[in-house]
Length: 304
Image (cartoon, rainbow, N blue to C red; front, side):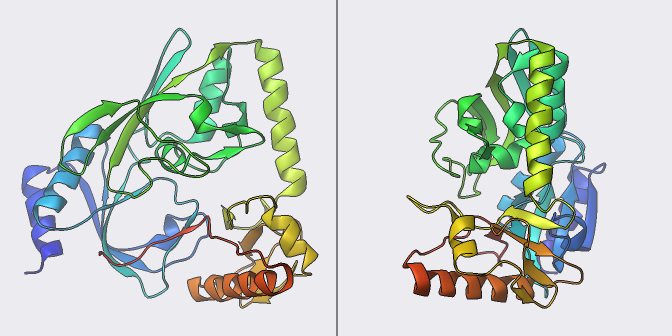
């Protein structure tokens, strides 16, 4: 019996209500709609189940990977021997007290922004169209249109690498980065501080940002969102466009003809297609402009 089999047996005994899936295809769980299977996936319906799964894995020397909505993620075609804990199936509760929201990590940003709108709270309009969950957004300090999670998140509740649940306001937010970016912590939820606003103004702002997204971004195709981080002093999409790379294609993967900052799955793309295309883009941008593009998308690897 290997460690994954031992983990599955242990979780079946200690957490009998926890849904477990063997050899689960990650193409079903990423916004790229591609990727091979992971060895074992847990889909907890509560914080208690999520904590139980993470602690059990670490007791057996298995490093869990914490998955939200699967945006900004590439999974190798051959699959990976990893234990994945997906939060979006059950960690979706939210409560509001005045201008403060507390939401669990599996709640989608779209739903979070909609709940804020219902309460007449402003500050989350930028998150309305970001295709991720709160946990992932906090981890990478997601943002768009001059807004980012660092502006609203005041505290984060997490399961740390020692297996302890704690709440911290020391988030270390930077550009697409936080103190949680190394993936060692399971983010369970976050507290967000918003402000009172006019519902009509909030909705108008959300509608405007969504209209801008639809007009500029290739939402009609699966993708991982923005493929590259913004280089200092530059914009990745502008550099890629300047190098004449819009529409560049490898297999089913393409540099979007609509927005050069996105690599999209035009149909049947593999992870290898995306990685080869990304390599070509980075090389040609480096050769023609001297700028080194850095991936914003994370690649799920084997346990280290």
